[in-house]
Image (tube, rainbow, N blue to C red):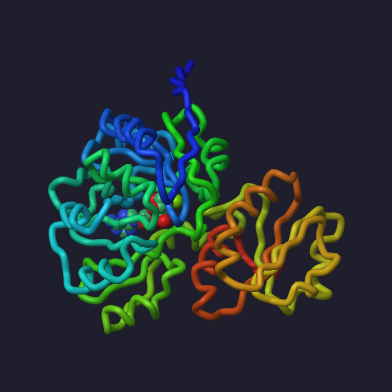
Length: 350
Ligand code: TXA
Ligand code: MG
């Protein structure tokens, strides 16, 4: 019989811009003692531990059910602390940090000796970022150590953008959840690899490749993305998904809405999300439906909506793909990871 040690999880509301320092001091003390604290950032909620303490970081992997080969992002309260986590700081890093930190950008750089193997999955590099909200920055400042934090969801699930999402996934596995309300960006940070000759975009985010290129004044290569081995299933129907609801989730192109949709969904209860196209296109379709006309609103709401729909006991979640333009790149990426294949791919595979 396995013995499961459950921790009492406390949820505390904190103003993300003017956080109560007494609350943050209590949270910082948990971090310093090697415990876990979940907290809001501008992107998604993170599950944090002292990045310099391997035993503490081990608890993150256990709480999430995350494979130990997937490295963690280290959060710093300013670029001085971020630089202490890396062994080499380049001109590109300097320019990007000056321009985008605090903010939703993670830089991959050679790691320093203060960062243990468990954080980097044994690799030679570390991801660092200074989060955009005062709440996590003050927490790090009070803890006086960098905080390793992946998204605060169970591994492969949908990232949390509300404290209630974290509670649902990690109740009994984390000591404290700092509830700063809904995440303002709603999608994970842009991950940029600066450890090679040419910078590489590993994960698109709401800061675009064009914006980053503009600041460093040279080209950035695309992927292979951080999660590509799991995003590309070797055989249909057997892929491991990332950022994925449990309900079968499929992508649609605009031109397959009519009349193919009715055939495809005959007798099925489904929800339909329309990204970037006029709302009337999905009128009367599905039991639940939502249209987002622009990428910012979609990013802000996407994960909460997927979690809500996932709990609704539907047969299918359909997502009408947004246009293939840069503004939608991060959302397109996450939708691809949340869904197996387009329903036409699936039809062909049958
Ligand atoms: O917005 C965010 O980045 C959130 C908040 C909490 O900061 N964090 C987050 O962490 O999304 P996580 O662990 O869910 O995603 C981090 C991604 C993973 O795909 C991981 O493989 C990649 O960044 N990553 C981390 N360190 C890396 C490294 N040294 N080299 C390459 N990829 C790395
Ligand atoms: Mg994650």
